[in-house]
Image (cartoon, rainbow, N blue to C red; front, side, top):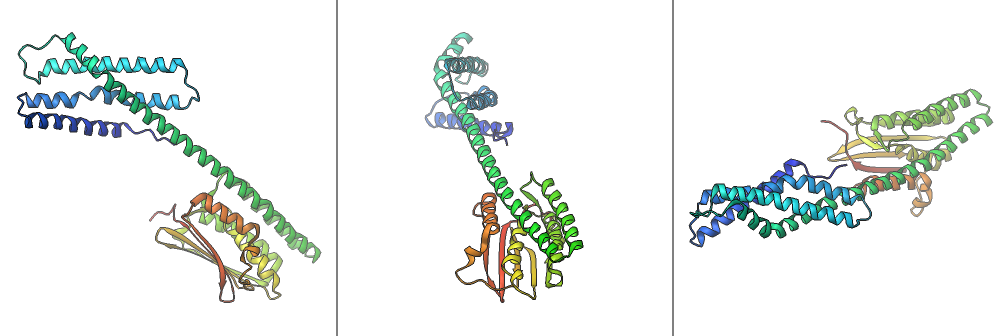
Length: 353
């Protein structure tokens, strides 16, 4: 992350200031009835700011460098004083040279160059100090803001990593329960296949452990393997379908977003029905948002039971969405058509049109 203004921005700011100053001086003096070499005066005032424009990147870097230090000793103030004096002297050299060359005041007897230099050095030193301090403060502030943003990003990443680590053992525990159930039913071949599928899923989880965002295609591939494992347990009692247009497969979504919500459908819905049921997942784009709907036709929720039935998976998803998107997301669960529907809306990104 780099918040330091580019040289183009610095040049644009100083160009605008120089143009305003030169135009204002010429206009006010002409309005006051003065008589000067107006073209020379315009260029004199315009190029007066050149030295300050050229040293701005260095002063900004100075501010950034000092912002990274927690304490400023007497050496710091000596460096600032030396920098201000040097800028003042160089600026006075440039201004005296401009004035002696352009003679904007149309005086017949131009003062010696050293006199002009001294006048501009003494007369402009305070302004140079103020400008130096302003630019330095901007650099200091930019670095402080960048550091704050980095700290916030690292804190959010740590929170998201913690939430992800919370869901992974939960997923593993529930899948091992599936294996245990298969063994008790003496479906040993299915148990072995489930362990093999679990091994592949864990490998995928390890490969993606450093990514909080993955593509929709990757998440759906992971979910398909999870469905395959559950299919070994439920057999024909489980029906599932996924509807997602190919154009959205590159969309970015949080890793392990869908599996906890689908698992809720098994735990609170299909697992309680002897005839099983169906889970339907659909993905669509609505403007700048990606809409995801997960529906299971299991038993509906009592009107006051949604928080209690949500469990770790729901709370985990909610906190991760909040950490990643702030207020720019929606997450809702409600009864619909004799079953339960979960709706997610997140900003659409990663899709090329």
